[in-house]
Length: 359
Image 1: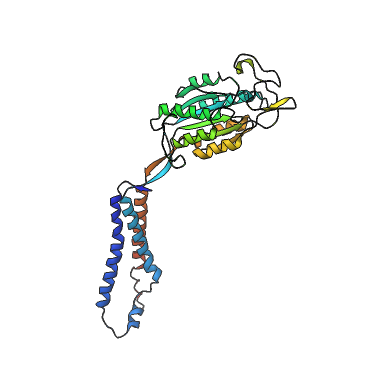
Image 2: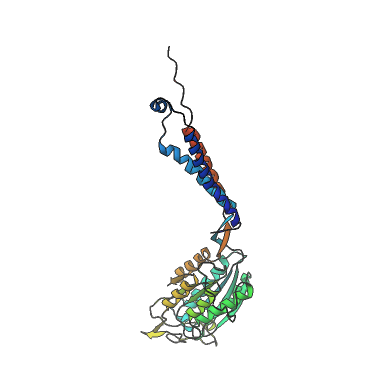
């Protein structure tokens, strides 16, 4: 918590000053006491009050004064709030293993369909960028609100050899840097800056969807550290099963225009078993990437799970840390406490009713 007017917190001294004044008045009252013949008679004449009835109103009133005095300093709290200038970089793996048919008709077709639904579901003001990666990573569409351009680009995704997850993260960082002046490009030396992504992150977010492990280029965790140093979160999605399956892509899903036959196709780290191929997802690396940047790792093993993961992401994406003034809550608490204390004091100290006359 921070304060806009920290000097106003001096008003908190009002409470100890009141306590000191009360102590001084009690001392004067004791000096001015009158000696009477029977204290027991006076006690019997006064209405009985327990000690907690005397103290609770005082404590409530003093608590109210403390809250009001704290409100004068205009306290602020760092809260996760929605942002109206969010950019989402969707990085999709187009390595050859995306031709695997363990998810019908194949992983690439399902990923394309899920990505299209994700784009259509976003608010019109949300900027989305598209990065495709295999052995290299390329920015297909910079962050934009033009959904038609994004949908057209998604439909052009083609598979190729290799899996460069780390390079995809770096390419996404540079795309965000073009839009957000608070984010430095990957070539900028940040010195010894300590990553603070977990405490104060930018609204821009990177989402990496992959079915394998990094086979070329920079290590994903190293790239994630670059993102964390720029206060960017990276959400990772591991897509696919561990069951061996044939590699079948249509001609328009492959770079070069030739279709893979069953059980054939480019590698990307897969291993053949029983006439089929499977791609091992490096979940350890994907978890580390998410943890380092303050994001989250998800696993999707079929079309429904992938659609759910992408559908739930907006709950986290678009939130960023911001200092929000909470003075009104201090004032409200102070008023309630002070009036409660005063009300209880008046109620418990009211004069007792007079006895009825009997004839």
